[in-house]
Amino acid sequence: MSSCPICPRTAPDGQHLCLVHSGELRGWLTEIPAQARLLQEFIAPAGRPTQGRLGGTGRADAPVPVDLRVLVLLGPGRHDAVPGSDDDGTAPIAAILGAWAGHIAYHYPAAGRDPYGTARTQPCEQALPARGETITGWCTWLLAYLPFALTLPAAADLYYALDSLTRRLRNLTHTQPRQQPRAAPCPACDLCTLVRTDGRWHIHCLDCGHQMSPDQYDQHAAQYLAARQTADDSPQSPLDKIGT
Image 1 (cartoon, helix red, strand yellow):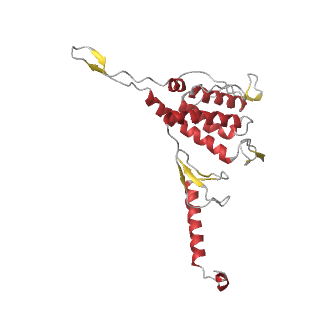
Image 2: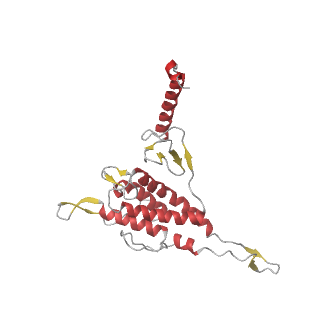
Image 3: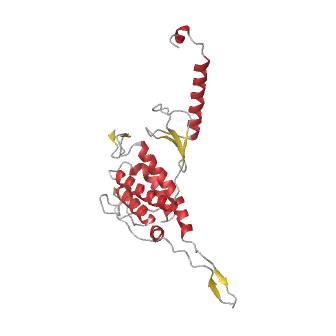
């Protein structure tokens, strides 16, 4: 086990990020397509042509200027995902996601045979998202290959890249996923820090990163409540009252 490069927590065996930050990555990849759909509303026409008195056409009001940052984020472009490369924060969403998918694919071992029938293992030539090279397609691909990406030394760079991208999107849409606290304490660290975050399926601990499915949490909460009720109903020893 190794230390997470982002925080003092320990990363699982073979991975480079702790459960907290790998969980954030999954959450961002789920959130980004929804944020992109909100941005699409920002570039809708601000006014419709209206019929004038003389039969001509015109616009009732001047169109509201489109935020160029939105056009850049939703437009075409390219991005270099090589760790340590300069990023001025203006790359389009799809370009960032596609570049990271390509970087991960290059390190993913692909088994095949050459024209002579010899079995060889070599990096994949490119990433091919089944849902197309769209924001949703790239996020779906990255989610599927995230377990492998977490084994790469560049996992922290991927984290920082998506953290920066998600912050840019939230600043423009003024939306942020809500965290809904859970009543039962975390079964791993015993702290009351379990939350359910919008867009994330698993319930997770903000302190240790432990994750549970909703069904697992419901079972844990029921057991915890039963244990509390049993403790409250148990007869109190006279010695327990000393000093009260």
